[in-house]
Image (cartoon, helix red, strand yellow):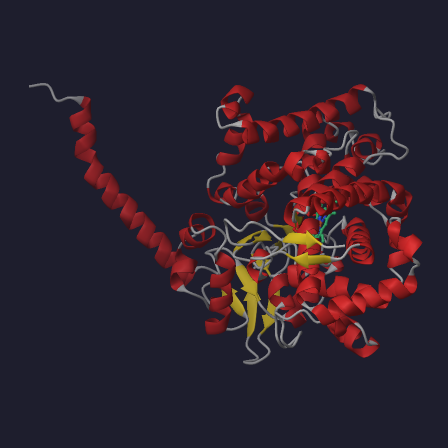
Amino acid sequence: MAISSAAVLLHYVPAALVLSAVYAITLGIYRVYLSPLSHIPGPKLAAATRWYELYYDAYKVGKYYFEIEKMHEKYGPIVRITPFEVHISDPAYYNELYNMKLRLHKDPWYYSWLFRPGSIFATMNPDLHKLRSAPIKKGLSPASILRVDHVLKEHLSRLTLRIQEHRDRGQPINMTDAYRALATDIVTDISCPESLHLLDKPGMGHEFHESIANYTMFAIWNRHFTWIGPLLDSLPRWFVALQGDVALGIIDALIEQEQQAIDVIKNDGKSISTKSFPVIMNEVYTSPDIPPSQKTPRRLFEEISILIGAGSETTSNSLLTTTYHVLANPEILANLQTELRTAFTEQERMDVLSYKQLELLPYLTAIIHEGLRLATGVSGRLPRINKTAPTLYTNPSSHSTYTIPPNTPISMTTRSMHYNAACYPSPTSFQPSRFLAPEDKKESLRWFAPFGRGARSCVGQHLAMAEMYMVIGNLFARWEVRLAEGVDGRDVGMAHECFAPFPEVGRAGVLLDVVG
Ligand code: HEM
């Protein structure tokens, strides 16, 4: 009697299952007891398999941050959080890890998340990063930001129009949408020949922002299953259209960005818009430091799409957190309004105040620092790798020194430092006074790193600061606004940590009543 091939296969299934189980158990035992990281404290399951992180971060959506916090409470300042990675929670060590001199690499596994390997954000090697980032740093330098002051003012005027419209209609304005639209419009204007102009769209691009946020949270799966990113990128437009208009809007925005990259290259880097300043896409293309092999449409597109992503959610979240806390604290609001009304005449306050005018104000400055601290626009754990030498870490309480072998990702989380009661007493409360008196300010700035530190710190920080001053300064100099009913701390709190902090799913956002 002939035996079918299916029957033969079935015959081997139990053996294959047993072998896989033996392999998995042996690997787990090796990782927990014999690996070069086995001396680092932490949960055995996290040391045995990456699926521990997968469960909390991808399946439960951005919950590993909270698990890592619990691990530190139980095991101390150094913890092995995956079979391969060590996490440190010790503010005094922050400057040692994120140190200019060390020339550390980023961790390719962690940064594979958004599938943009051509961007500076996902460039692991410090030499290649230096080359690629030079024109971007130039385009976002303090001098360049001053040159685009008129662009920022123009976008602020469009925000003013939206606020005015809502006041005239007696409708609350959704600042979650407004700030996301504003930050996206500004960063696209500065980076690309064409801006997205979301502030002018109905609902200020609400669905667009929601989809980007949802994608950002979903993209965590991409770290664990690296085929997801390329698959999503290769989906044809007609297929995406089946998911509805919002998905189509996003894919069209990406296609448009890629087309702009193609046009910039076709025009040999000469301006293809009527703008009075060079946009970053052109700066990258014309940079003499970058070899022609790095000037493909795909790389240009990846660079710019990351710049837009990095410059929108972070900034809008910081603006939102600051606005919420100022309004939730009447005394702070009153102090800020007094400072603004003393510094500027009514006529000046009815016009758009500039970054240069506003950055001189000490109370506003303290508010912005405190807002950036509480928001911590990047909440991810930022792993770095020393390729050549072991890293030594000494636990300050036990005085035990741990040797972490080369090539191990070592991470720290700025948000934990910003919320550490030893660095900032009553860390969850909004207290601009921490950044006011010179001695308090000096101490608070020691632990203040919203833009990260070292060679891979934020390239957009000068633009972000200009936006913070201009939006917060102008909002409270000109308008009387109140938190609408139902808005509370959950609208700016972090319920999901997906590189950026996200509030509970389903919250309506920070709505403001414009009363004058
Ligand atoms: C308040 C707003 C912002 C915050 C809190 C923030 C924070 C950060 C942090 C902490 C990093 C380091 C990430 C890492 O180590 O992987 C970073 C990197 C980066 N940021 Fe920002 N950022 C903000 C605004 C912006 C803006 C406006 C832009 C663009 C114009 C931008 C573009 C980038 C880019 C491209 C990187 C990657 C830099 C590199 O790897 O060399 N950011 N940002």
